[in-house]
Amino acid sequence: MPELPEVEVTRRRIAPVLIGRTIARVKTTAQSYFFLTPPSRLRRALLGRSVLALARHGKYLIASLDDGRELLLHLGMTGQLFTSTVYSPRLLSATQRGALTPGEQQRFRPDAHTHLQLGFGDSGPELYFRDVRKFGKVRLLDRDTVDPRLARLGVDALAAKAEHLFASARGRRVPIKTLLLDQSVLAGVGNIYADEALFLASIRPTRAAHRVSRVECQRLLSALKRVLRRSIETGGSSINDFVGPDGQDGHYQDERWVYARHTQACKRCKTLIERIVLGQRSAHFCRTCQK
DNA sequence: GTTCCCCTGCGG
DNA sequence: CCGCAGGGGAAC
Figure (tube, rainbow, N blue to C red):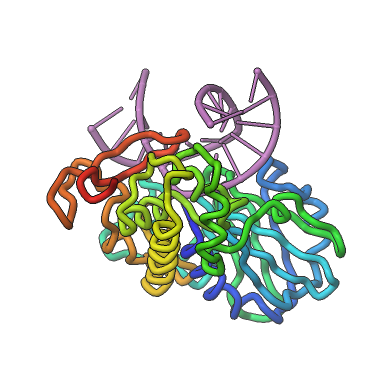
């Protein structure tokens, strides 16, 4: 679900309510592969700690603890990180939503999908990490240890240079979209923004990476950065599950050109947007605008 | 390189 | 019942 913009929106809104507060209560669900660090160890390690800084690399959030350790967070497909002061229907299942009378609000109640709850030594809001599908990840990193997942990440997409993309594409026969989604090439790009950037650069997602010229790589990366920045500005994309940490939906979905618009007319040329499958993921494009 | 898997819920 | 979902890793 969340790509770079949604993770960055989350980081910016969570940081002020997380940094500098002493963790006084930790609750977790039972062990599952969501926990790369066993929940019992996580509870012990976090108690009494505070967070000094919250950074992002690609789709990972990295909280620096005051004892030199780090907490890695990944939202996977359905991860939601938010505070107890928020309310959003996206935090409820459809059944629960249906039981609400229109306009009714209720405080979030931690449920079986709320895998991590942090309470603090003041009267301020608690922090929740909820994830229905459990594709998200939490890991405690000891001082001076390197997480192999982080180590494999390429340059953050917002900091990348076109020459890097071109060099990474050379000799690669994979579809250009598959290359964009490769986190060891550009960290942070996911399905929505790969499709959107390829549309804006007029390149078909299926084109072999080595057939994308240097100039096209420049256009592609510049389109990608533009799309990512604009999405951050508008609070990210709320198409299925994403809810901002303050409970607000993002609005970038209103500006998309192709993602999940298959069977609808291209906003530029009226050709029907197509949906194909590429590397087990859906890809959306306009065959008139993209070559 | 593909292919399958992890998991839960929604909508046709 | 089936297919689908902003993720990623491991196994052929």
